[in-house]
Each structure stands twice: as structure tokens, then as C-alpha cells.
Image (tube, rainbow, N blue to C red; front, top):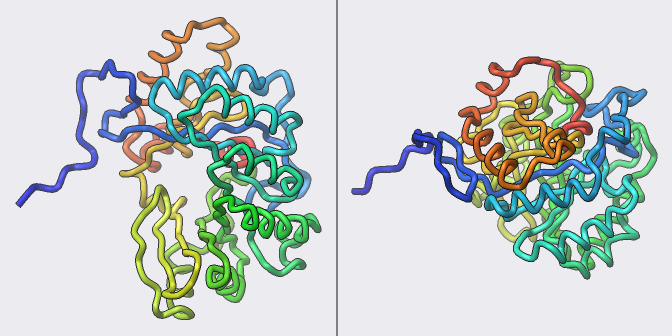
Amino acid sequence: MREPQEVFRPILPFPHVDNLIDSHGRRITYLRLAVTDRCNLRCRYCMPAKGIPFVPHDEILRYEEMARLISIFTDLGIRKLRLTGGEPFVRKGLLDFICSIKQQQESIRIYLTTNGVAMAEHLEALAELGISGLNMSLDSLDPKRFRQITRRNYFDRAWQTFVKALDLGIPLKINTVLYDSIKTSEIIALAAITKRYPVIVRFIEQMPFNGLNRVSVGAMTARHAEKIIRKSFPGLESRGASGTAIRYQVPGFKGEIGFINGYSRRFCQTCDKVRITVQGMLKTCLYDNGRLDLKAMLRNRAGDAEMRAAVRKTVFKRAANGFAAEAEALSHEKHSMAAIGG
């Protein structure tokens, strides 16, 4: 019988290859790029009621800088790009930027993470461009609860985006944070929409990236949410793991239900992503403080070959898991997810 391969297999010496691979044998093919730290919501698990101090505009990556970074990372084997924020469509000119990237990088699949509030008017254009999918934040189907959680009365706008995206055939995932005050009834209601709609509803553990440097007391785990759903939908069947999510489906339902152990960090062995913050810091793990200042390299006129080498070296030193990355961090300050790139 064939022996199972170890996931964390040291690779030494440092590999001089085009693809990104870390010293634990994980190949990196997925880049999350934050285009803004601004947002039109004030979600309780993401930032304080008064918001966060925004990054000055001259410290944010320019579109031409982001385009160059995307080119460098595609040369290194990145095939999936997710544009995040904040709320990406708060930034002017984003649609034109996406269009230019699609023209320049034909091999890359582009995804967006959004709250849906300012997206409905752009969906036809995104569908025409062939956007690969949307991840949309939605923490309650009750407009009053939506307002309590987000501190804004925009549920109707978000739901319009939900319906319109599906009508246009854009693949859609719903992200629901297991915020400390989430109700069992809300979890069941959100899971139940997979009966009618071909969406993946993913329940995500709350993480300490809320601008307050802590997780709320009583925040629910993904395992607890799974127990709640199994009790209401006893026929739940496994669909395996996909990226960071463990996925299930109720027989006969059109969509799927997923769970993401972001705080308990149960998916690190298969993690294939890195992040670039709005200030151009390369993060090889959500829990590190940033490992490489790409913006400084860009503005100091580093060449592409120099930048590729620096990225490869940084990724190769990636921590084994989120706990190790957090322990190695020079500072344990936890910024808002809006500043990191949600």
C-alpha cells in the first residue's frame, strides 16, 4: 500500500523555481489583494462604531503598482486573484482596473469579495468580463439584525446584489461571520437558502481583526455552528474540503454549506494563499504582521527579477501554521480586517 505523503515536508535548499513554494511543501497559487481599506459598512466584528483611522491615499498602492504586482505574481505561478477591501467598489476606477487586468493576464481567474451594497450596478459589466465569482458578506436575513450588525440600513441593496448576481449566472458564495451575538435561528435561516439558491453559505469563525485587538467573548466556533445545522438538517452530507472551507450539502438542496475554522486554524496544512495589504505588505499568513514591503520595493524602482526573488525567498520562509505565524510576529497588534484585506 502506498504510504501517505507528509504535508509538511522540508525542502532544502531554497528552490530556484518559477513557482512559489514554501519550506513545508505547500505551493502558492492564490493571491488576495486589498484595493482599499475604506468601507460603506461598520460591521461590529470588523471595526469599532466610529470606524478606523484610514490609510492616507499616498500610502495606498496605486492601480499601476497593483497591476505590476499582479504581473510579477502570475509569473510566479499565481492563477487565482481575489480583490478585497474594505469594500472594493468604494474605490473609484475599480471596474476599469479589473478590465485591464483581464486583458493583460488571460490565464488568471479573478474573484471579488464584497458586502454587495454598492455592487448591483456593476454586475452586468462583471458578468460580461467573465468574473470567476463573488464572495458576499451577509450575516443575517433579517433587515433589523442586518442593521444592528453592520450599523447601516443597507440590507435591500445587499439582497439586490444577491439576486442579480445569480440571475446573471455569477458564482456566488455567502460569508457569514459567527459573531458572538449570532442567533441559532439566523444560522438555520441562512443555511436554508441553499435549498432554493445554488450558493455556498459559509460560516466563518470570528477572528481578532476588528480594530480592537481581541475576539468578542462568547464567539461561536465553526464546530458549534455545524452541530446546530446538523440538528436542523440531519441528512447533511460531506462534499469534502475546498480551500479553507469544509463543505456539506443537504440532499435535494441546490447549494452547499461550508465552515471555515479561521480562528482555530484547522486548514493551515493545505493553505495555498498569500495576501497583499492595501499598503503593499506581503503577508504569507493572516496572523503575521507582514513579511515583505512590496510598496517600498516598487517605489525604490526594484526590477522585476529582484522582486520575484524577494517574494520567493519570503514565501519559502512561511510559518508552518497560523499559531506559529502569530508567535513569530514582531507585534501582536491585530488590525481591522478592512485594513488587512478581508
